[in-house]
Every structure is written in C-alpha cells, then in structure tokens.
Image (cartoon, rainbow, N blue to C red; front, top):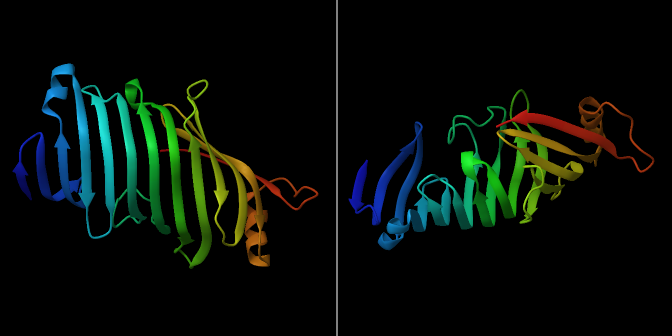
Length: 209
C-alpha cells in the first residue's frame, strides 16, 4: 500500500503477495553488486502473524544463495490460501544456507524447519504432534535433496526422511508408532504393512508442491 526509499534501500508497507497479506518489508542491497549481475543484501519482513529475515546473494536469473534465513508463520489457509484447509500449525525456519540452482531447483539446504503443534481441524480436532526437518548442507546426489525428519513429541513417534526431487515432488518415508491407543489406531489406517518386532510401522507418502 506504500513504498519508500529506493530500489537499493527501502520499505514496502502493507505487502500483499498472490492475494495474501504478508506485512511490511524492508531491504538493503549493495548497489555495486548490480554491476556484477548479482543482488547482494538483506530483506526483512514483519507482519501480525509472521516474521522473516534473509541475506541474499543471487544472480538476476534467480540462482545463487540465500543465507541465515529465519522465519515464523502459521500453517493456515487464512495466511496462505494454498495451505491445506484441514490442518493448522506453526512453521519455524532456521536455515543457514540455501543454494538455488538453475530452473529454481534446490542445490543444497543447511539448517532446520520445524512444524509445531500440527493438528487436524476438520472434521474433528485431532492433535498430530510437532516435527523437525534437518538438512546437513551436503550437495544432493542425483538432484534430490534429503532431510532427516523426526518428531518433537506428541501422539506419534516418527523417524525417517523427506526427499525433495525436482521439479516439485516430495516423499516422506520412515517408521511411525502411536504413543496412545487412539494414535496407534490411526497408524493402522495410514500404513499397509504390520508393525515390526519393535512395534514400528513403515510409513510412506508422496505428493507434489
């Protein structure tokens, strides 16, 4: 709704992206970097329900690095309309380094993403727990970026991986166990093989983003 400053150092008040209200953004970019075909600087976004900050070192074609990314925002379709309508939670990002390759492909990721207080709200309220996804910053093999996924408490014990495969496919695989009788009944519904000797069941889910 309001712009101030310049292309290199300024602010945008009332930022809206794809119909979603984000908040207020400020940025500081090094003018000299444009002479080398890069955008180097930092961006900060603050809103009523989200906050985010990142350091940029990107070429004009979108390839390069984003470093020291911190962000917090809700998993809520009222905030981003593309989010699932039957889930709620909070997403917390702490990424030290994200490398973007050509075609917007991920070169590598180093850091963590947390999904806290995940819950199903339709048709009934169902707590689903909290989870952490960790990336070690190692360059992917075969184009796929793999993160280690585990629970942070809640009704389900989970340990496995999340694989991001270009252009937009993700696969969650691992072992899941219900910590309560109700949770174990859910596990039986979402898995196809019987639990192993330790009580763990194999879980696999594939989708696109």
